[in-house]
Length: 431
Image (cartoon, rainbow, N blue to C red):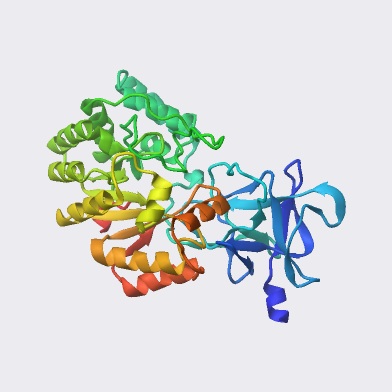
C-alpha cells in the first residue's frame, strides 16, 4: 500500500476563474466507462508538449480521498468551502491515446461538453502527467515546427502564383484563422497537404466539427462553401507532390463534409494529377459510405483510404454516425473493395476508454480486422463528451467491463504483427 501511495498522482482542479491547483490529500482519478481508477506515475506519462489543460464547465470533479480511502465527488474546495471547483482534463497532443478520461460528475446536465477529448491527468513530483499512451512519434503536427512567419511566407507565395485558385484561398483561412496543422504544413511544404472538396455529408455524426445543429454544440470551423474545380484541386496537389519528400495529399478534412459526395470532381482531379506525376501518395479520408465511388477512385490512382469509425459494431456505429443514405455494410464493402485493389486501408478509430476497450467491442474489432484485412489503426481520441457518449453507446449495445486501452493495443500487436499502429496517414514509401 505504501508503494501505491507513493505512486499516486495528486488531484488537480480549477476554480471559477480557471485557475488550476492541486488538492493535497486527494489522488487524481480517471474513468473508463463508468469505472474509476487512481492515476499513478507508472500508469501515466509526462504531459506531452502542446497538450492543453481544460476546465470542464458545470461539472464536479471526482477524486480519491486518501483519508477515507474512497472516491468522492467534490462540489467545493475542501480547504475553502465557499469556493466552487471544477474538473480539469487534458487535450493531449497528436500521437497519444487516452488510457482514461477525466473523472467527473455530470448529474443534471443534458447538454454535452464542447467538442474536445478530455483525458485524465494528475500532478506528479514536478509536472503534470497524462493518462496516455504514445502511438506515433512523428513531428507532423508539432506546433514548434510551424513558425507563423514561414506559414505567411508560403501564403504570400501562392497568392501571387495562383491568384484565382479558390482552394488556395480556403486553405489560407484554414492555416491562418483556424490554425489547422494540415493547412500550415501545405504552406510550409512538408508532410501532408489537405484537399477539401465537399459541401455536404451523408452522415450526421454526433461529434461533427464542421456542422452542428443540436445540443447547443458549436462546430470548430466553417465548412467549405464550394466544390473546387478539378484544376484547382490538381494545382494544390501538384505543388505539394512535386516538391515534398514522402508527400501525402488527402481528400477529406475537418472543414468539409464527406468527400465521396464530390467523387466526380475528385476523380477528374486524380486523373489530372497522375497525368503529371506518379510521385507521392493520394489519400482519401472518408466514411467509406459509397463502395462504387471508392472503387472508381481506386481505378484512377487513389493510393490509400482512411475510414473513420467509432465502432466496428453496427448498432454502435450507427448511433454515432447516424447515416442518412448508407449503412454499416456499405462501409465494410468499401474497405474490402479497396483492399481487393491493393490499396492501403486504415481505420480512423475514434476511441473512448471504457467503450473501445470493452470486451464486446474488442472481440468485434479482432473479427473485423480478420474479415477486412485492414493495414493500420490510427488511434484518435474521440472529441465528444465521454460520459454522454458512454450512455449513448450503452443504449446501442452492451459492452461489458473495460479491459484497458494499453492492453488492447498490446493484444492487437501480438495477434496481428503486421498491423500498423499510429496517428498520421503514412506515405506509400513507408508501407
